[in-house]
Length: 94
Image (cartoon, rainbow, N blue to C red; front, top):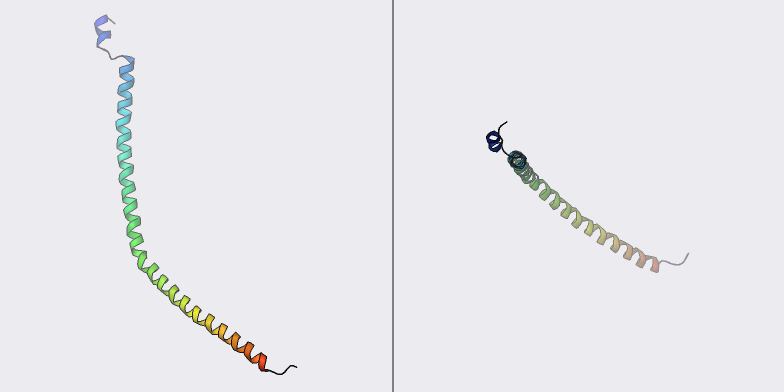
């Protein structure tokens, strides 16, 4: 090759930089695609959570109702124990 042709060719460093720039552009496109897919997945999860929220609200209400009923049963049990203890005190010794 003559000197003019060699001067017009890009240097090794220029070729490496150009290759890195091309790789960077390709990766940016891939990251953009991944970002889009992640956004779609997040939206899908949010929609599913919205559908299950009323279910959890109903369950929470049911649990609260059960807790209040258990409180009443516990009070009845304590009252019954107290009354039993009082009655035992009034019984003649065997």
